[in-house]
Length: 79
Image (cartoon, rainbow, N blue to C red; front, side, top):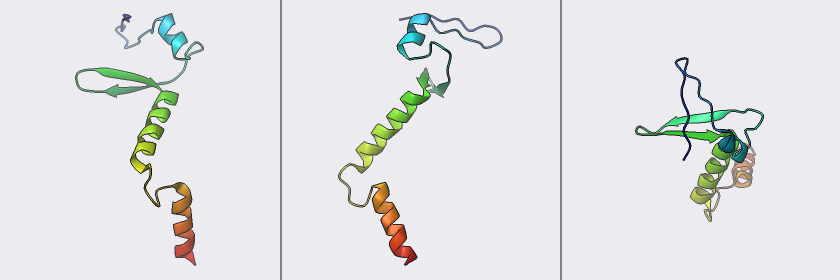
């Protein structure tokens, strides 16, 4: 576990080891999620991968759930 300090101006510096592990060596953008009793930091890439995994889990094996199915349905409606 690492420790970080928040300055009076609200700035926080992540430990170098954490920045390296998550590809933030040249800076980068993080998403901040307030979980009520905790704060979650995610890189944009991590958030996208998480959303894609949730989406795959929700539509896996369901007929008509793909983008191609959606577009085909819209094309059929337009005819």
